[in-house]
Image 1 (tube, rainbow, N blue to C red):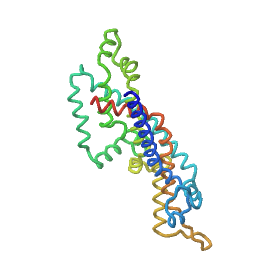
Image 2 (image 1 turned 180 degrees about the vertical axis):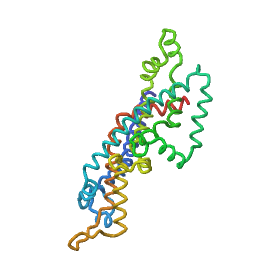
Image 3 (image 1 turned 90 degrees about the vertical axis):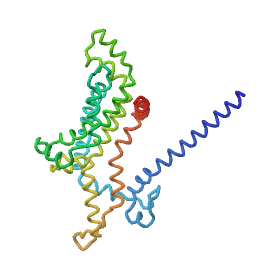
Image 4 (image 1 turned 135 degrees about the horizontal axis):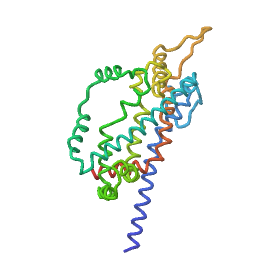
Length: 296
C-alpha cells in the first residue's frame, strides 16, 4: 500500500514539474521573441515575422534609441531616484497606516478604514488634481513624480490585512515592558512583516518605474524626464516618421526608421531592470499575497 502511495506521489511530482516547466517556457517565449525582434532588421520583421533567432541581425533599433546616450542615461538616473525614494518612503507610510488600521485598540479604525476604501471608488478627477499640483508649485519639480503614487488605498488595505496576521499579543507584551508605539512598530512589527513589505514594495516599484503620465502632464524640463517618458517620445517620433513613410536625408537618400524593432527594444530597455529585481522578492511576494488574502 505504501509502495503504491509513494509511486503515486512520485508520478504526481513528475507531472507537476513537467507541467510547471512547460508553462514557464510558454511564459518566457513572448519575452524571448521581444528580445529577438529588437535585434532583427526591420524589413525581415515585415517579411518573415517574429522569430526566436533573428533572421537578419541588426542594431538599428538600439542605435536609434541611444542616438543621444546622455539623455537615456539621465532618464535612467531620474527613474532610479524616483523609484527608490518613492518606494521606500511610500512603503514606510503604508506600513504605518496598515499597522494602525488593524490595531483593535484603535477606537476609530473602522471610520478611517472606510475613508481609505472610499478613495478607491471616487476621486477628484484629473483637472482638479492638475490645478492643485500646479498651485503647490510642483510644476517641473521632481517631487511631482513621487507624491501622486506615494500612497495607494489598495496597498494600505493589503498591508492592513497582512498586519492583521501578526498576533496583537506581541504589541501588548511590549507595551507592558514599557516600549513606545513607534519602537514596537520599528523593532517588532516591521521584521515580522517582511513578506508584506516585499509585496507592497514591488507594487510601488513597478508603479514608479512604469509611470510616464505624470511626467507628461507636469514636467516640461527634459532633464527631469524619467526613462518611460523618454522612451515614449522616441516611440512617438518613430511612429510619426513611419506615417511619413521615410525621412529625406541629404544627397537624395531615403532612410527608413526601424519602427517595429524600436517598439521591441523599448520594451527590453524598460522592463529589464524590473525583471532582474523580481527573483529577489518572489518568495516574499507569493507569501505576502497568500497571507493577505487568507487573513483579510
